[in-house]
Length: 168
Length: 68
Image 1 (cartoon, rainbow over the protein chains, first blue to last red):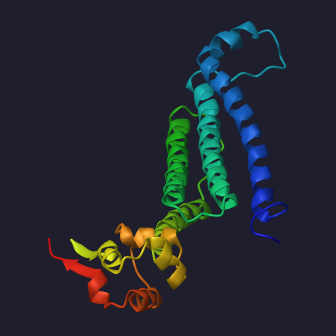
Image 2 (image 1 turned 180 degrees about the vertical axis):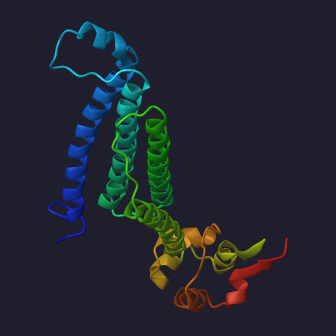
């Protein structure tokens, strides 16, 4: 399989990431709206009190139940956007640029923020006794370390590329 | 501070243009400009050899070390 150009792995990845970005935008918008109306959950619950089929979480739990996936979706959207920018430089044939090292570093920090948010929301769900499915695993932490290593590799690669370009 | 390139001075002494040198040594004008303007990070021995051969000079006539 070709590295760049039509039918390459990079172009397939770009298509997949563009599709993921559209879905993530929809999810972020939907969760954003839910986040705004979540403080009014008790009032909504009162309105549907007579209905047996609707079970609405009230109190701080509703906010946490929406805020956690919202933060996760925003982090994912940020990462997808950075990966698309990196793939764009690959399409132009110069992936070893300083900007890509910065992008990988930003992805690392975003993933770190995502994992940190997991712990924060986990703690809040314990305090508010909300049933939010939060689990942290070693693979995620290893992936974060791998991204930071990749950022350093790209930083050094960009320096070497610049040196090569300026060698007469 | 560091190494500076005085290619323009040697070219002036020899009455040769950058384009002419480029054709003679087989290095692009863009690369010679990088060298002439001091933007180059490194110079290959083969390039230096070709330039010295065409300009009939020593590497020391082109490259200088500035302490300040």
